[in-house]
Image (spheres, rainbow, N blue to C red):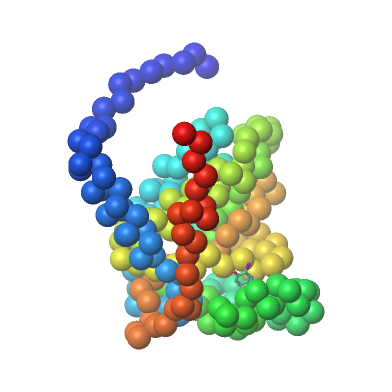
Length: 220
Ligand code: IYR
């Protein structure tokens, strides 16, 4: 395909505005927390679709957009997902996860019970496509894990911007989701993200984020 270019026209900020905006945005993003208890209050499907389209605007290898976002709001399907996820999580917490991993998680208070899979009004299950299937013909995708990871970051940011909360859940292994959601062979589950309003008076673990000096290295 021949390259075709169009003008890029987003306005830039003045230096002082830029400093203020970068600080404001950092503080806003730093106020995001993973929440594990959800209100059952529904969310308009248009809101979910807008959040997903924000995620789908993410960069991807050769702009292949190698993702599918499945939205589960059906209560029976949510219950089936909970049953299957809890089966796997029970095995993980009772033998599959090494003690070091369990110790690392202990301060988060997680266990194999996953009530949020039924409580949250919507479950977004993100699938990655290592290749596309066009009329049965395989078309390669590139940097698939990086691309889908970026799209999930955009998704979490959009959810936070809308004043909603999410949980990046990784039931392991996740293959049961291919079957329950009837996905094609080129799609593999990547993350399961319940979205909704936080439960009333919800608490979150008292965690600290690393300081700038621990995550940034300058080469001036
Ligand atoms: N998948 C499990 C365990 C778990 C793993 C990590 I790494 C976490 O940060 C949190 C939980 C679960 O969802 O409980």
